[in-house]
Length: 304
Image (cartoon, rainbow, N blue to C red; front, side, top):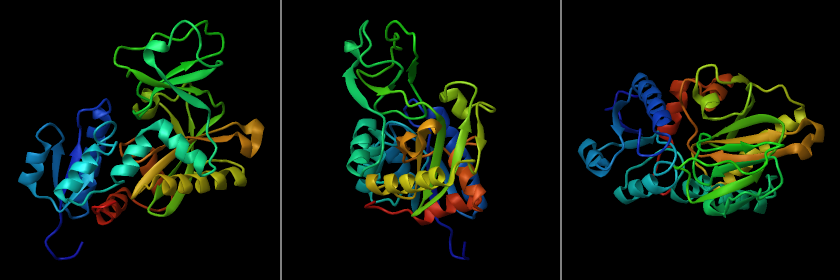
C-alpha cells in the first residue's frame, strides 16, 4: 500500500444462512490478512441492521465473506449496488445464477460443458419410490458447502427421510462416480487443480473439519484431464459472469477418460478458512493469502 490514507474495508461475515459458521471463519481469516496488507478493516456480522452498520462505517470497499443464502445469492450484492459501495466477488446476476444449481447446469449445457443429469421436485413428492435410478444425490437447489446433501446408494429400498430444514423444492441428481476435483479461477486465470481425498462422502464435515479430507495439489492427473479441468473452470467462470474469484467442482470417472469428467457446480464465494481449497491453490502457484485478499479488494467495484 502507498503512503496515502489506507482504504477502509468492511468485511461482511456471519450472516443469517446455514453457512454462518464457515462465513465467520472466512471473515476472520480475511480480516487478519487485510490488516497485514495495510488496510483499515472493520468486521461486520451481517444481520438485520446491515444497512445501518454500513452507513456508520462508510467503507471504501466491502469484502464479501458471506456464504450461502442472502450473502452469496445476489441479495447482499443488490443492496451494495443500491448503496453504491464497491464490493468484491461476483455481482447480482452471476451470484444468483451460480447459487441456483439447476440454472447453473442450464448455463453449463448451453456452453457445451458436461454435467450430471438432474431434476427439481417438490419435497412432498419424494415418497416411497425412487424418483430416479439409484445411486443418486438429493440436495437443496440453493445451498453450498454440502449443506443438506443426501447420498442414496445402491441397495436403498426407498428415498431417505429428509431433515425438517430441507426446502420445499429439492434437486435430485444422478450420482457421478469417481474422484473429487476442483479448480479455482482468479481474475481471468485458472490456477491449478486439486484432488480431494476422503475416507467417505465429501460432506460438510469433510470440507471444514481439520483432517476431514486430504488435498493433493497440484493433482496427479493425466495431462488432458488436468487441462480440461482448468479450461472448464475458466469457461464456467465466464459463462456465469463471475468476477474476482470462483471455484468449480468436478467428478472424474477414470475408467471413462475425458468423457467421465463432469462439472458439479461453481462456487462464486469460495471458502477462505484454514482448510479451504482456493487459498491453498493460490499458495501452490505462488500467491500468498495476503496477496489473494489484496487482489480481491483492488478488484472491487459496483456494476459487476
